[in-house]
Structure formats: C-alpha cells, structure tokens
Image (cartoon, rainbow, N blue to C red):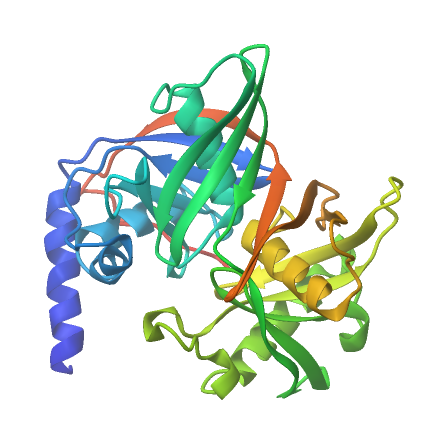
Length: 352
C-alpha cells in the first residue's frame, strides 16, 4: 500500500476511535427542497488561518470522519448536504462554514448560505429586528458572502444570498461524452466552477422522468472536462475543477420575468433539489453577459421539483457581477448523532 494510503488509513482509524465519544448535535433545514444539515459546534478543532485553509485540513482526519458519519446512510443519504460552523477569517464576518456532501468538501453553497442566514437569526446568533433586513456575513472557502434575512412580524420571511462576484469563464467549450455525443458547454463561476448547457442539446428535459439520464450526462461532462484548461480558476488553484453541470431550459414563470428551469448535477452524481444558489448566480452572470437578462431584470429560476428562487444582478465589479438570489429556508429537525464502535456498518454506506 502506498505511504499516502497508509497515512490516510491511520487518520481514519484515529478518527473512528475519537468518534465513539462524540455526541454531535445538528439542526436540519431545507432550502427550496434541498437539505442542509448544520453542525453548530464541532467536537474538535479544524486547523487553518482561513476557511479555505480549513477546507484543506478537513479533507483528512476527524472532520472527514464526521462528514461521512453524517452524510452516509443510515444517518444521511446520497444527496445529503451540510456544513460545519467554523471561525470566520476575521471579525468582519459573523461565522465561517465548511460545506460538505457525500464526496467531500465544496467551495461554495448558495442554498446552504440561505439556510445559514435563517438559522443564524432564528437561533439568536445574529440579532434581528421584527421587521426589515438583517445581514448575516459568512466566510466560505470561495470568499465572503452575505445572507440578507428579511423579517416580517418577527419571523423570517425570505433570505437573499449575496454571492462572491460571478462571471463567464469560457464559452462553447466542446466536450465528448460516451452516451450523449459531442456537446458544447459554457464554463461559469459562481463561487464554484460549473459547466452549463441547454438540456435539449443533450436530448434531455429537466423533469424527474429524465433524472437518471441527467445524472449520467452530468457525470460524463464533468469527467470530460477534467484537466481541461477551462476547469482552472485563474486566481486560486485550490478552487480549480468543475463542481457541477447545470442543465437548463425555458420555463413559464407566469410573472413576466425571464423564467428558466434547471437541475444541477454536482460532485459525483448528486442532484440539487433546489434551483442551486451558487449555480443560479452563475446562470445570472451568463444571461447578463449574453444580454438575455437586461439590466435590472429578474430571473425566475425553477428547480426539477418546481421550487423557486428569484435572482438579479445587484452590483457590477471588475471581477464579475454580484448576484442576489432570494429564497426561503425552513427548519425540519434537531438531532443528536452518535457512533457505536460495535456497529458492523461503521460509518455507514451510500447505495448510489
């Protein structure tokens, strides 16, 4: 066994020994149908001067053990998503977060940011007046973002995710796939790199009946872009790599705004039930760049399950456009997770 594999195995074993003593409290939300499991307090520290540094540290050792414990069945499922609350980069933010899913730690998560805004206010971590807007400032691996929480009569009415600047990185990048032929994708930045294309160009529709084919197409497109220069983020190599594939199509929003339906297939075949927060920001940047979304106009963005975000350009910066993505998040559970070292299933399993 290579030394690197031995080291990883040793770290995993050490993590399992620690896990027997853990009592991990979580608060679960959903944002437009997509789960987000919040861990407010970790039973260990994750080293690093910044949230991006901590993301690197988290990929081995106890943080990765805990990620697997919470995402794998029987405690989670293949499409589970969550975040570890960590210290912010400096006093300019209320908190930091490490986003995780079944395949590792991501650089951005818009739906998670919306959930964190609701949680921060509802838990009392960030005080808010009964009416009006309160900004919850959050450091994530891709930068500093804001969850603008709109209160109405003492309750969270909506949350607007203000992302890092989003931009078009490359247009009409050709990719060859085994089952869908040659496709052309746009590579977009929204805190993570996305491949974006009309679903129809792959012979697909954004409907649950096409889900398995959408998953396979997303996997094949992501694999085809591995090593492609378009999959490199020019400022920070730790943000390289295509995170997800966005399939989009026109929709009837009924409100007079530009309306589209999309599904984002991210990581290794995970399906975003929401319209994808950071992906929505990336799509707004693309539509703004092409002129399809006029200055000041709103995109009504629908998911594969029919849930909805509204989004528009808020600020223009030299590096891209700051997009505001508005949606809702609701608490669904509070849990206490444990690990029994006698459990033959160990950290659990994922069927897909």
